Length: 136
Image (tube, rainbow, N blue to C red):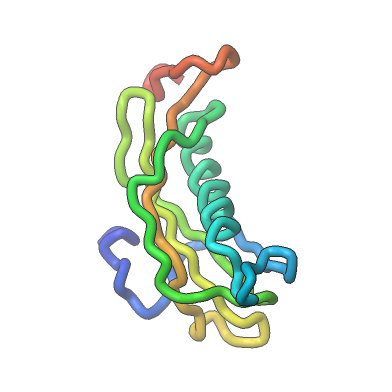
């Protein structure tokens, strides 16, 4: 079963996260929760890392095909971003990104899924023109 099929699981994926960060007070919205745009940007970074590994060249984000915010993230939480390639095209790759947060003093088992989405990236060359992933 792929990680994508486990979207409703109560535990994070059983693999190393692509990215792990701790949000700071400057990353909050007016209500003191972590700003959704900050989470989205971290997810984009994690997805781009996965896409770059496949393409072996620079990639650019062309769309966020879906995005769900499940639970809030708080200052000091450790947020782990897990990625999985879900589709490849001639020049593009779609990456599913799940974000899991936990209070840093808690166990990994206490993690909660906070966001998930599918990001599409296009491989580009030095002139910023799309290149075929298979030719790389």
